[in-house]
Structures are given as structure tokens and as C-alpha cells.
Image (cartoon, rainbow, N blue to C red; front, side, top):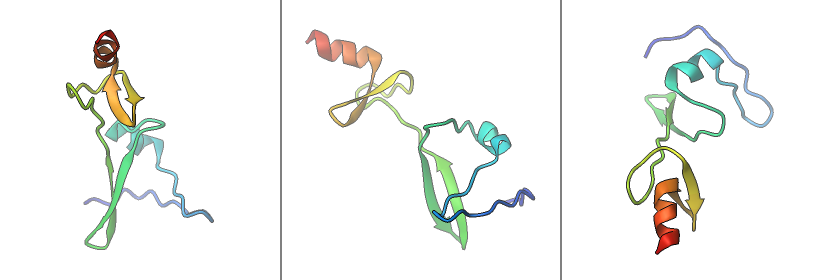
Length: 80
């Protein structure tokens, strides 16, 4: 891993603001899920890629009965 030179303070709730440059580089947008782990004494953040439970699509996802389903599959479920 390469140090970025961007130091951030941890607030009273344990939060750290991720620099916009890094979020853009990794494709992390508002509302995205990130997985946080510890490896070799370092925090590791990875974007969680979400997919439709039926077809694997990553676009137009909605929560349906506590599962992520794309709009096309929701339409198929509704038609059934």
C-alpha cells in the first residue's frame, strides 16, 4: 500500500471523512456500502458490489422482501 499523505481526524463518533479524490478513484458514491476490515494492522475499505439475487445485474436495484432485485426482475415477479 502507498501512503497518500492525506491525514484525517476521527470525530467523537469514530467517523472519518473519505477524501473526494479517493472516493471518485474507487467509484464510491453517496449511499454505497463499504466493507471495513483490518489486515496487517491497517484498516482496509472495499466497495461492496451489490447485485440482483436473480440475474446478477448491478443497475436499478431495489429492495424486495429484504433482497436486492433489479427493476427487470421485479417486473417479472409482478407479472407472475
